[in-house]
Image (cartoon, rainbow, N blue to C red; front, side):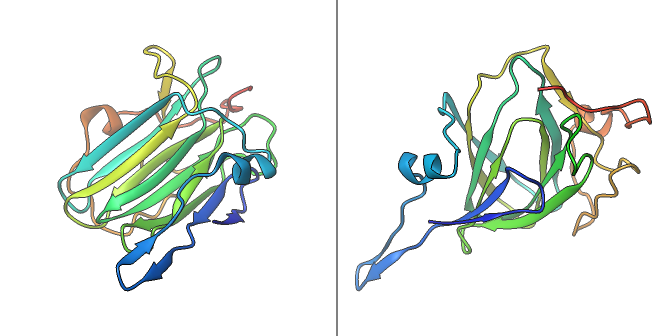
Length: 183
């Protein structure tokens, strides 16, 4: 695997290195030793699979609050998405900055998202599927969200929005008093 740190410290785009022959290819998508060598030693306690039916659908921007803050490791296994993370760590030099990457079944890229980040995506194709590894169990009452069009973040979604949950449409806008998540 090749790990490329994004401009947001602690987050990585990960490219598997496939080995191929006449049968097809094989690639490692996770190796505890390779992750640990970079200090990425979270234990995965929950794995989720999402299916998004329509291109243009937005899911996000979600995060978990301490003491249930979570690291995520995400891979697209069908279709394609534009995946976005926003640094909401209190005191971070990249506070409220974001980065995005296309994850697809074709490019096989993955993203490692540390605690203290909001995460979301827009489906670029119909029938997009993601596999999420989580370092903490989902805990109701400790989730948070940032609105998809928050002017303090300036996200530029690549497609027109087709579908979004009421919950995601109604996440609050950030205010100047928002200082981030203290981890």
